[in-house]
Length: 129
Image (cartoon, rainbow, N blue to C red; front, top):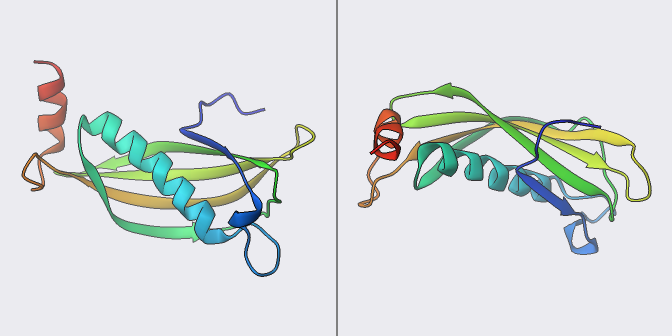
């Protein structure tokens, strides 16, 4: 069992499936974006918007009823941006078996109250005021 704390934990439901009956990759990506966005806003101490999503891979499959946990970490910090890696792990509904089902990278830009990019270090400084 993973000792990290997930940013998102949710159960896949029938509405989350693709036409073939598997969990839709777009749903997985959206859950990962929610988790990464939560981390970006928390670390940036304010509004953070996704500007790119890259390097997605779907090495495993999950079924309806499986529990999805999304784990994220900051991979890089730019002047106004945070690059966050996201990993999606599915746990079978009736057991403890876990499978990595998706991974990807999101880039977020921090915005000020006028929706203009703001410096990452300004977020940390304002948090210490």
